[in-house]
Amino acid sequence: MRDNPVKKKLLKGQPVFGTFGWEFLVPGLPQIVKAAGAEFLLLDMEHAGTGYETVKVQFAACRGIDLVPMARVPTNQYHYISRALDLGAQGIMVPMVGTAEQAEYIVSCTQYPPKGRRGAAFGFASDDYLGGDLKTKIRVANTRTLVMCLIETEEGVRNVDKIAAVPGVDVLWLGHFDLTNFLGIPAQFDHPKYLRAIDRLVAAAKKHGKVLACMTADESWSRAYWKKGFRLFSVGVDAMLLQGALRQGIGVLQSLEVSATPTRKK
Image 1 (cartoon, helix red, strand yellow):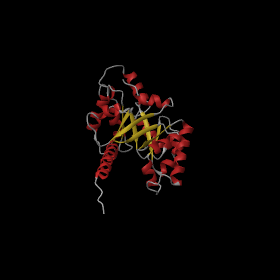
Image 2 (cartoon, one colour):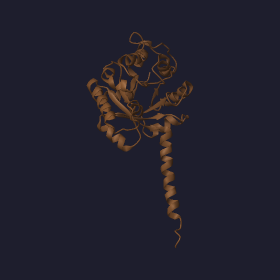
Image 3 (cartoon, one colour):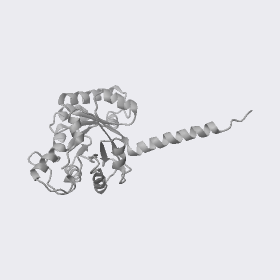
Image 4 (cartoon, helix red, strand yellow):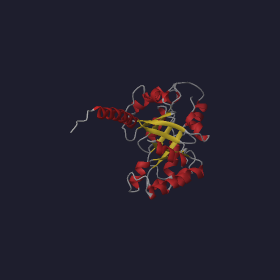
């Protein structure tokens, strides 16, 4: 079975960069993002409505190109987590984690017995349809899965220290937009309430040796959160990346059009 180089790097304190797959889940997407330098492709199943058949195809396209496939599942339920793992996910992100008990349940869904409650299915997508010793497969599967808890509610911030203390939780992922919404300050990322919440998140991660993660869309955000200690970054979302590049290119052409327009003399 393949191991998870992203998790290995993060546990060594090394940074990892990748991107979200959202709208353009075409056969070439994994190779495209890999060629751009991404180390992981995180497929969204929460907001994008992505189905399991699509996820399975994308994960299959990650094989052989050293790109780690991960998924954000819709909610904290066993059948969402286990299905994504059975299709080959090496990282699981769960939204709106609010308590240590929820975090413990998430971890249990990613582990085979006796450590957890994950159901057995071997010789299929999750282990690349290969044979081999089952004990070894179970050990590798339990070890390689990157467990990411999205902290994006007041409850999650309030309990973040207890969540971070849960064995098996690897990453505290900041859900910045949702967090400002739940704090009653939509998109006010310089508001004192939001900044205090970030401080609690950072402190919990440092105390318990967890990785800090977030999505970034611009240079200033990347620099600011790097200074705070974040080391796992998703660079944008495919639709926004395309739209931003297209907007910039069209803007250049529009400026040329304006400069080429003759000025009438009065």
